[in-house]
Each structure stands twice: as structure tokens, then as C-alpha cells.
Length: 90
Length: 157
Image (cartoon, rainbow over all chains, first blue to last red; front, side, top):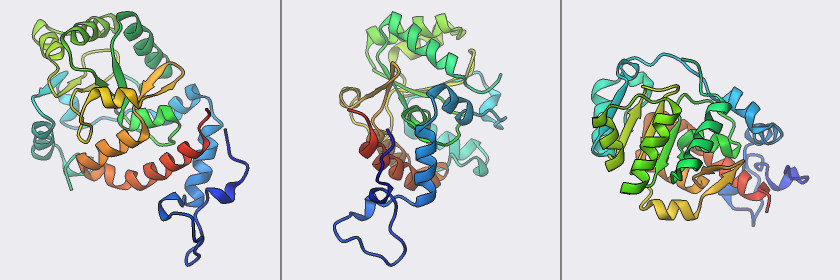
């Protein structure tokens, strides 16, 4: 369901203070428009737009991997994957 | 192999329901099912770690077409923390112990059902991404938090 009162969701313009509206509730207008557009699409269509497939170096080289802990997996990502894939911790 | 498709998600849902697997979609794939507009290559599930659920999960994965060796099946049944499957009809990450979520039962209680798909609550998806602290999530988090706020205010029921 899309709200009829967009002003309740949109982010305030820079420098404007809504007073009682919490900072975390402000949604940038561009994102709000994207959320509303997505809400109007059936799930099947959202899948078509959302799931993509590209080759991932190293990650695609094995058909199965397992790790005893997430920490071990994160370490493996940092040591084995190219930085640009973004799997490293900040 | 192509991108993950809706019909494959339906197969997961239907096969796992038959085998009574307890699991949740998590990560960006979960957020997308909730309505979050973004792209991803990853399909991630958070299964409950228990012997019975592990056996059901292995049976379900085999029915879906994953070619699991006995050793791999044993690791899944045991619930190794993180398992990456690329030996089936689509790639799948099994995360038995996601960062930022203490117990499966807590996440299960908070789950959101979308067309029969059990999905982690947006708060849990965000918590796991915050705790993972990965570069690739950094840009996503603010937008995901905004989506959570939008979703909470517009969800039905």
C-alpha cells in the first residue's frame, strides 16, 4: 500500500527542521520514489529487476565452500578475493 | 547459469515446505522480497541449526538439484556456520550463524511472510549487515534503513 501523504515520508529539505519528526525517519525523495515504484510491482517482476548474474573471480572457482565460523569466512574473503568485490571488512 | 529467478524461489519455498525445513531469506535477497529495490547476485538463507532441520534441508537441497557429496551433506546437517553452494541450479549461501543475530528463534519470531516466503525482519537484515561491516554493504545501509522506515509505515496489517 502506498501512503497518500508523501510529506509524511519524504525527507525535509536541507536546513529545515520538522521538530517532532525524528531524523532517522527522513527518507530522501529519490529513494522514496524508488520504494513507491517498487511497491507497485509484483514480486515476480521485482525478481527480474533485482537478481543479476556476473562472473566473480575466485568466488566462482569452486562448487562448494564451507567455514566453521563467519569470522573464518570473512578472513578468507579478505585474503583471497580482490578488494574491488567489496567483501572485505571496513 | 543465469540469474536467480522467481520460479526458483518458488521451488525453494515449495520443496522446503514439503520437507518442513525451517529457514529464512536473509541479506539483500530477503530485503528484495520485502520490496527493497536493488540488485544482487547473492541468494542467502538462514536455516535453523538442528539435526532434524539439517536432514530436512539436505533432502530439500537434493530435490532442488544440488549435487551434495556425503561429506558436504554432513556439514550441512551439522550446520557449519557458513556454506556456499555452487553445485546446483543456482548459487546459494547457507548462513547458520549470521552476524548480528543471536538466535534463529528470535529471527523466526520476527519473520515476515511474503507470498509464502519466510523472510527476516528488516531490522534483522540491517543488524546482520551492520555487524558484518563489509565494504560492499557500506553504501547499502543508509538506503536499507530508509527502506525499513518506509516499509514499517506502509506495510499492510
